[in-house]
Image (cartoon, rainbow, N blue to C red; front, side, top):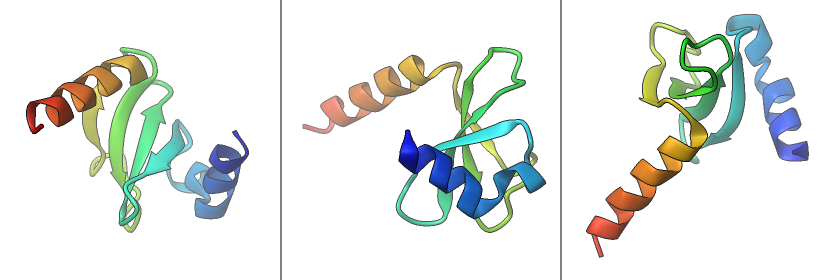
Length: 79
């Protein structure tokens, strides 16, 4: 939880995307975010760190559990 709070404070995401919450990153230039006002509630998005705009955020899944299921099935199929 501490890392999530720090990431959101350090990137100042609230200034650019007040309805997004950073929950992680790809180790590069993309943030894994929740869009708090998404119709599907807590939709998961990939948000570019450099641009940080809603228009450039890419929808990944309806929920974090859906995101994990998709990610797990993709990784399993490559074994």
